[in-house]
Structures are given as structure tokens and as C-alpha cells.
Length: 375
Image (tube, rainbow, N blue to C red; front, top):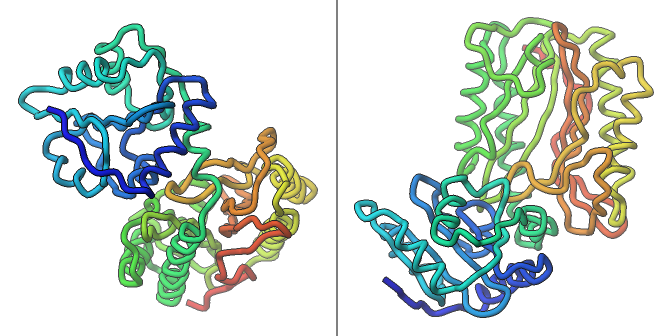
């Protein structure tokens, strides 16, 4: 079944950007599936589930879409003009893919290599075995790298919610609580402060758990005096993410803990200092990691400096040595150096940084100075 809807000018502009990607990649079209690029394009969020849902934007001509029948009324809200091939669960989706192939007559297609699932790829190839499919992830997702004023406002709103939630959570930490109990208090505070969702499930780790960068909260570990408590989390608001990490010490801090913390903080501050439009991701990571390497704790380095932040909590650019992507004004990335010693403790300090023409702005305002909680 084919339906045609009215196309708004704003949607037309967004579709044009993806058509331009297709031209630059020298393919006939770009295909998007539900996810951050899809949402950016149509300004509506759709679930990624067992039902294939596909938006195809050609280098020239009108776009088309494969839409599960149960999503048609939601799709009406997009304001889309073009062929829409819908399908029902009881009939299967093969006919919709075959109709799309016949309608568009494509010979090549760029897809989101990190997002498109294998069964959707196979459905495209079954409908048209000679279709050349390439991974256009970098170019497609690259459109999201430079944030608009509205994007930055949404990220900032998510950050403010996160910071208020963190303040509430830390004020309630007591010795003898489990990591899981602190995690639950943080989650409750996030939603109480206005989060629409998690940017990702929080990391709450104390003591030796803080030495594992992606630790999971334990229900059988009670925090004790002298522990490092690492909290890495973020709210999602208006479709955009915050990503913040702070490490505090409980009751007291050892000389080693203080020294490691000040080393990580110096690396974090170096990242802020070297950031400006025109610098590369490699140069930022090299400067930040260089501070850690020059310390007595170089063997505790486990991670790169950071990653881009926006509709996804991890997106381009990735702030690491070897990535010579030039950062332009409007890029937002995480500056999150850390030092981790397995069996001992870890420290990470993470800010969300906006690149400007003359330098950088820390969108995160939560204090980075060493905090020792009297709990």
C-alpha cells in the first residue's frame, strides 16, 4: 500500500542533508533505521524492535519509507512526502521490501554500520540481490557532530538535571550503604529532578570496584571509610544526553588517593586548556594522556580521554590518539581522564565540553575539586 503525506520545509531541509551525504559517498541513496540519525531527520522518535522500519533518502528525487502498519498513525505526525510501504505482522515484510526496490530502482545504498541490524540488511539484499550496500556510518552520523543552539540547550538541560541529582545523592551517602542502594538513590533523584530517561545505566562503584571503569553496582559491598566512590551517569532530556563522572572519598582520603586525584584533575584541566576550534581529537588526547604518563601512575591508564556527546551518549568524535578529526566550533565531547589500579581504587573526572572558536566552555558546573564526604 502506498501513501503520500505533505512535506514540511524543515523536514525537506533535513532530508536534503542526507541526500547530500549520498552524493558525497557516490551512492544512489542513504538508508536510516530508528535511532539517533533517524530521530534527527524526522524529529520524532520510533522504537527499534523486531519490525523493520526504514527511511530511504535518494541522492536525487523523493524519499521513501518502509513502515510497520501499526506505526502508520504515528508516522502521519512526521509530515513525510513520499512513498510509504507498510506491512502487517501476519503478512511479513518481504513484499514491502520488494515494492521499495521496484519503486526506487537503486543500485547502491549507504547504511548506518553501527546501527542497522543484520536482518534488515538481509531483507534489502533478498529484495534486490545485486544492490551494493556500503557502510556510511561516519558520514551519516557526522551530520550530528556540530550541535545547533537548540541541541546545546538540550544537553545543558540534561546536565543541570544530572548535577542536581548528584548533589542530592551525595548528601545522602552514609557508611555501610551498599553500592546498589546508592545507585537506587541516584536513579530516584534523576527522575525527581526531571530526567526523561537515563542517558545510560549509572555506574556506582566504591573501593576496589572504582578501579573497573565500567563497574556495576554491587548489592553485597557496603561502602566504608577511606573508599573512593566513583559515580558515572547522566540524564536524558529532550532527546539529548548528559555524561558526568565525579569521584569522591568517604570520611577521609589517603595521601595516595589525594595524589592520584590531583593528577587526574590536572589532566582534566589540561583538556579544557588545549581545546579550541581547529584542534584535533588526537591533540587533545595526547595532551591529556601526556599529563597522566608523566606522573608516577602511568601504569594505571586504561582509557582514552573521551567521546562526542549528543543524541547518543557515545558518538563522534572519539577523543583518542590516532584520530586526526578536526574539532569545529559546536562540537561537544567528554573530557574524562582517569587512573585505575585493579585491587586498589580508581579516579575519573568527567566534564562535558563545548568547543568554541576561541577555546572551550565546560557545560558541566559541578565542582571538580577533591571532595571528602563526612558520612
